Figure 1 (spheres, helix red, strand yellow):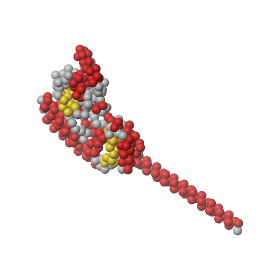
Figure 2 (cartoon, rainbow, N blue to C red):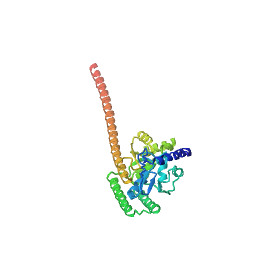
Figure 3 (tube, one colour):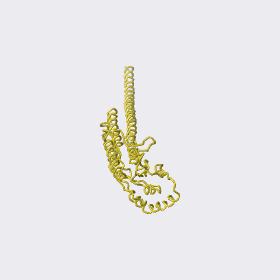
Figure 4 (cartoon, rainbow, N blue to C red):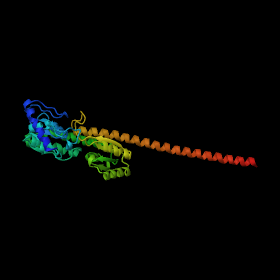
Length: 323
């Protein structure tokens, strides 16, 4: 984001402060309501969902970027400057390039705590919950140990369910192509990842050819995409190798009922199961087409043989008559 754009955003703060009204962002996630509760501003719905689970009734939670887009490519708005200005604590992942400039532009005195690491597997998600609980304790003096224990128990339950579903649906060893940002989750389920591709804008022609070759050689049945990164490339790969493309999400609130990452993982699993069923159907259709082609070839060969036999018989009859 350009420095000039930030200065322009700051100029809008005067209007906001004079009017003193609640502001709702275009994405529908930021809410500025006068409250005595400490304000925790999160850069993504991953972090805001964790804060809500641990302290939703104790703090006011605002989220900056929409779950529909990659936070690294997010364009800040005037409402985001205001959110930072009001914050008592700012939580970020560490890969958002706009956080420091946004804080500077807003004049916020709130500490920025970077909750680094992946979050789309049970093991990784546990660490995110623990780190957020530590930030709430260290910077706001809020003890959420009891709620953290319940949240971790829920993640343990999710992990057991994922393992059971993986076994029931025979995930282990199935060859798939995977978008980089879904690799952790897909690996944890036991799939055999035969090719990985990065953000579409960074995939070169040589990398694309390597993905196609590996996927074809290893007979990949799924191409697992990431919604926030765009799905055109995944669909193109799937079309070229004859696989099924399925797009997963890495962020809560992509759909109304996805309130946290445990719900997101369950939703993603159902999409994978549905995609595998489609892949099996495609394989059956392909097999039937192969059988039909075999029968067709055999039928043509039979007709040709019958025609040759008729010619031979006719020739023999002509010889007999001449005698």
